[in-house]
Image (cartoon, rainbow, N blue to C red):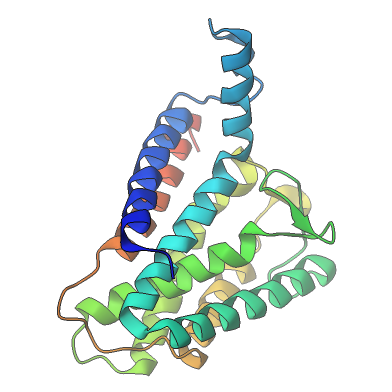
Length: 238
């Protein structure tokens, strides 16, 4: 397992990276627009590279910190099982979805969200599912005292639905991670996020009693992501 000192350093880096990302989306910076800034050539190229892969790096960092929190809360073996189930299940679900249009609707992934597995599924997508499902469940079970697995799973699904509703305009209209047929998000996409997030929260061994010392990292991570979505939408008028 990663030493505590390194994990703390990665957490600080994530916060700094997110802060820079917030400035970038607020001022609508993109790899194409960097060339117009009064920067040396090498710095302009570096900034453009960071902007091009910034969201992918953010997703890796976000999922890593939720995983670290799961390890602290559940233990290494149980956290690994949770991560494996959510990553594999969401990967299969999203691959099937983009190839068939079921259950989310008809959409196609682009290369804007980092490398794709087999040219189809972006690596970041299963990481996003893990971050949302595990992060929400760890947060809810920490502060909702006495809640059993079923209501926590339903609440996790409800959070995922809201999360996706706020994320969609950012993801497809601003970043173009994927393209919806007809450029319209079908209603079943949101209901599918609710149903499958609740199911993943139900079948994984992520349910745990509150820890004596609450870990705020999952809640902060999700709040940062939502803040970036909203800042980008406001700056683009969406």
